[in-house]
Amino acid sequence: MATVRDARPDERYGRSADERADRKLKIVGAVLGAGLLGVVAWAGFSYVAEQKVSGRVIAFKAVSENAIEVHLEVRKDRDSTGVCTVRSQAEDGSEVGRKDFTFDQRQKQVDEVVTVRTTKRATTATVVECKASDG
Figure (cartoon, rainbow, N blue to C red):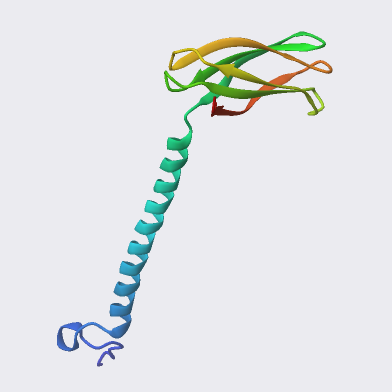
C-alpha cells in the first residue's frame, strides 16, 4: 500500500506562503509589543518623575467626637515645600473633615502628627493628594 502525502516536501519546494506569512506576523507582533511596552514604561516613569512630594498615613486615632489625629509620613526634596490634603470619613463613608497641611522642613522625610477637626466622629483618615507648593 502506498501512503498519500498531504503536503509538498519542504526540502524540494521551500516553505509555504502560510509559513512565511506566520513568520512576518510574529515579527510585526513582537515589534508592536516592544513599542507598546516602551510607551507604558515611559508614561509610568514620567508620572513618577513629576511627583515631587508624596505622603502616606502611618496611623490615625479619633481623639474626640470632633477631631482625629493623623500620623503622616511625607517625602519631598530637601529644599522644597509640600502641601498635603488629608480627608477624614465617618463610619457611613461620608466626609467629616478635610484640611491642607504645609511641610517646609529642610528634610527629605518628615514624620508629623496632625489634627483634623471633624463634624462628627471620624473612623478613618486618608491622604487625598500631596504636591509641591508654589510659594
